[in-house]
Image (cartoon, rainbow, N blue to C red; front, side, top):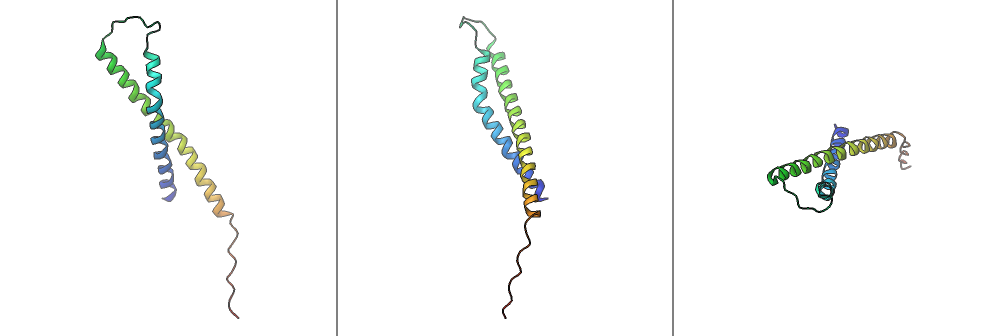
Length: 100
């Protein structure tokens, strides 16, 4: 149960960090992606553009959270395996000397 708790903690941390990174990076990318190439005057359906851009931001946040969770799951597995290997190879404790 402790291993599962550790892996879920790693996944949650990864999802939060992935979401944070996406929240910081996605608006700049979407601004560039949705800009007109020659700064010409355009006529558009603004409510539809707002829905599309908002949907793109939410989709990017889900992708970032999923990628972060997957990456940190792998890191968590490596961490758990290294910790188990370290506990397995520790030398036995020296016996305590008895007073003579």
